[in-house]
Image (cartoon, rainbow, N blue to C red; front, side, top):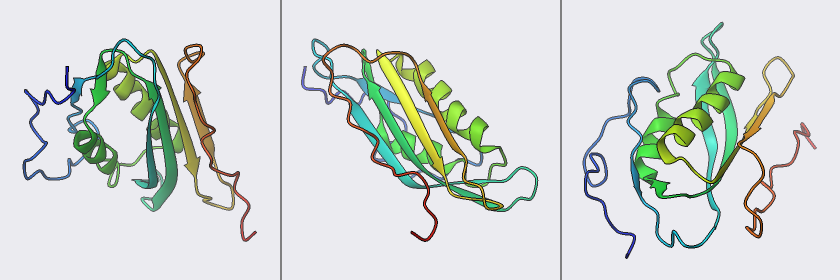
Length: 154
């Protein structure tokens, strides 16, 4: 299999608007190539934005998403639109981070999944949120997420 089966995708190659909310966002998947091998896939969203549900002010995070595919990969344009749909959505850091993981795990049924939500300070306190589905498969190279703890001005 070449890994290029895009049948059934509704957003790739089309003009698409940013969904108004995560509930309206459509995540899509494509068959994973090399299903006979375990390998890691990483997405980094260093400019993730949502809104504080109390003040309406913007919150910013650096997200790192790692997973070991089963049968499916997330289609990257749909992921980009899904993450962008949080831009005008009010929710706490913890909800946003774990909701992204939940939606992706439901869609992909990966062999392993983890997300690191490295949130920038609000009120002087950074909040980092982490979740993973369990232990990664043996022998899969899972690099460190590479995001340093918040250090302020240095």
